[in-house]
Amino acid sequence: MSKFAKAGVAKKVMDEAKKPQNQRKIKDAISSFTNKGKSGGSKRH
Image (tube, rainbow, N blue to C red; front, side, top):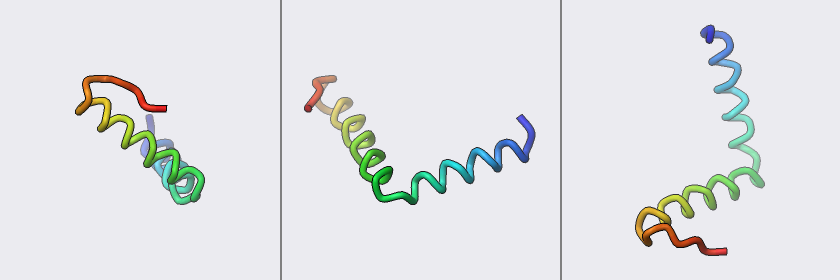
């Protein structure tokens, strides 16, 4: 991948991460990932 392509992907990720609805999804994903590691893999829904 060229530097320009990497920069473009990074910008897209940052732009998406700034959106409030995506911030909620990111927080949920991180919390479910960390809970999965602590609780032995049980899922909460």
